[in-house]
Amino acid sequence: MIIRQQYLDDLISFKDKQLIKVLTGIRRCGKSTLFEQYQKHLIQEGVSKNQIIFINLEDGDFQDIEDNKQLYEYVNERLISNKKNYIFLDEVQRVVNFQKAVDALFIKKNCDVYITGSNAHLLSGELATLLSGRYVEIKMLPLSFKEYISAFPKETNGDRLYVDYTVNSSFPYALELEKKKDIQQYLQGIYDTIILKDVVARRKFPDLLMLQSVVRFMFDNIGNICSTKKISDTMTSQGRKISVHAVENYLTALTESFIFYKVGRYDIKGKQYLKTGEKYYAADIGLRYALLGTKKADEGHILENIIFLELLRRGYEVYIGKIGNTEVDFVVIGEEGEEYYQVAYTVIGNEGKTLERELASLKAIKDHNPKYLLTMDHAPLISHDGIKQINAIDWLLK
Image (tube, rainbow, N blue to C red; front, side, top):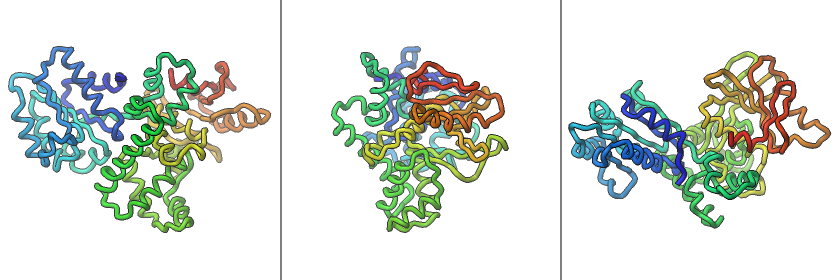
């Protein structure tokens, strides 16, 4: 089992704080396992097992808990009155009006409450209103590349592991499967569950085939500018007529289920956020390969997707950069200000023209914030007038 140290440290830092700890992320990214790891930590710190109440609301043992009253009563009956109780509610969105039970438990001084959900809708609407200012969200992703390779201590070929990481998936359980056929079936199962439970069932979309066509389009256009009109026009030209409004609804549902992440644009020179020209990246590239195969893969955009997810893990706000008529792959905003990243699978060859093209947008930025060019090329650290060129594998493992 891979210890998810980054997220475990987050939970530890918020232990016993008067906040509801809300763990969100795509299905099967490891939320339940993280709870188990954290519970082991609590026991090692002296918390007794009977102080821990763990309920997975998708487990058959808890199918009778359907609404907030039943959930509250189940937990309340098991509380120890003179000790701190650690309450873990996994996939809590399955319970009708769950937010009322969570609030009722939260206000008890001897309760420390942790919940998970596989849909961003968990933190919208009534929950956000009822618990405003009283929760902290920990956004969880599947395995990072650094976490992934920790499962292969004897393998020293980083490039080979990178290919396996993208094709075989970053979902933790995929590491337990040896045959590619089994991995593909596992990923197909995750995809079906997300689409049917987190998208279709909640949104009541009537046309499953149209939704799946949109999903395939999005996986095929990772890293490309994807306006709703472009998607609508493309689908219509292929004989599947769909309105812009319908596309918007599909994309909202897909981002709420964390299968895709929407990234807006930022005007670097004007220092303002732009309303158009957004891009979408996938939570896991293995899902893309499972649906589309490997023949149509754009290695540059795949690498771009991996870098985007890593930037999220490192706590940055991430945007697509615009500088004049050129584009910077990522503008990130962190505790120390802005940084700029350009991503290319390779800049070798073409008499240096590819390198110059990739550097052009970064050179157009006149401020002194850090600028990076990440590639898969094996070369020593290079500086191009202050722009650091770094091997992407080295950067991912930093």
